[in-house]
Length: 598
Ligand code: ADP
Image (cartoon, rainbow, N blue to C red; front, side, top):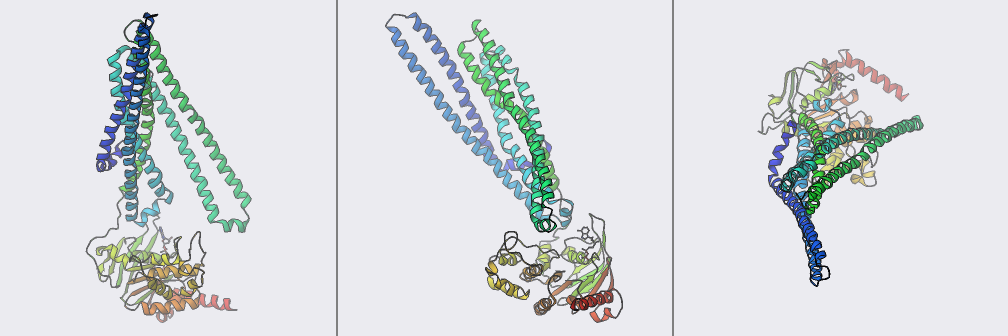
């Protein structure tokens, strides 16, 4: 239960609804108990009247008795009917308060989890799969809601019903009460076991269902490979197996589910039989009236559902506690990279690395070793080297997506750890290696980078022009309003890269990082983009990460990385003359280009 205590703050927030809910539950139960007593009175009145009616056989007064009896039955019937209406009204109100409260808490909890997710560092996302993150916010929260809503409602209902009904029963006859209550614990325990089995089996069904969904999702996203390799039949076979497993677990669940209602009906039936049998004996002995038996039968029916629910609620609470425990584990993780100060910092763009070392915490890969370099505002820095040399890692450290293990990173001569994180990231235009575009219009994809609400179309177009994508966009049927992504137009790799460059430029960055962002662009377009950037990036800092010598040779400074270390540093001419790795990469590319042009 302890993990669920976390939710108390939400109960406190919605205390008024909770309190009203409890009042409505009590009221609705009171109006359920009163009819039972009315029915007892009605039974007794009718019983008495029938006896007297027979006594007055052949007398005029017999007619009066008949009229009285009919009238009494109608009045009793009406009273019971009105009470049922009132009870129904209160049940409606109680659901409107408690179940609505549970939905509101579910909403708050989901928002809180999502908000917390957003604050967490990249390393958190490396450690946890997307599926896990999704499960916490959807499945686990739904299970927790079952505790906040139905479990709280049914438990309170059970306590109230139990107190009211048992008190009413005891005031009639203690012996009969005990006999009637006897089968109820068995009912509770068996329902607990059955619902536990149902839960285990439903989870299996859920798991298999998500297996099928991932399978199908993968099949559709990789449809080109499927078709090219002609493996449709083989994949269908696998799919068939998955659905076969799904069918099996579902049928098992159906079997257990089928047991649930008969078991309840049987145990309720036992209590009713007991009431009539023992009650009958007590009536013969003159201890209770036949009206009491009728009253008891109603009580038994009122008790059995709440008692049966105990078992169900117990397993519901257990599941909710397990889910909340998982949620709490995530919520208790604190981001390591936090903004050190709310004070705003202006970013100009001087960057300096002093003996920076960095090892990825999850994989233990030593990505940067003793890296030092300096780049001034208005200058351009190129980072090159083989794949896996640590180029992107430098970019990520500049945006403070990770913190260096040792050494210092200075931005405008100030330690990066002392700079307002929000301001720093706002002023960095980061074009990532793996381009991510949303399933939205081109214009929204570009505007996404901007912090300005309702950015005007001129700014979007101007960013697109700088990224040399404007002409391609206007040629599309819907221009900037063309939808891209899953259900939209498929763009080429180079076009996607240029859209994400436009997205970075629209933020008006003081530091622009292009992480291998020109790799899919032809050299002519590359020249065009670099030409635009030259003007745009005056007084700003540009960092270009690339294998392609053509992309970087005009940069003010080039650093060559090899296995996390800087092996060469200088301008294109300087390091070309060093006859090192840069020269090697340069000559290889020259050779490839000349072969390609043959
Ligand atoms: P480059 O950009 O030069 O190709 P990276 O900076 O991406 O190289 O990677 C440097 C090294 O760090 C590589 O060995 C790579 O496998 C590893 N690496 C990169 N990103 C991660 C990560 N998120 N978690 C663990 N290891 C990583």
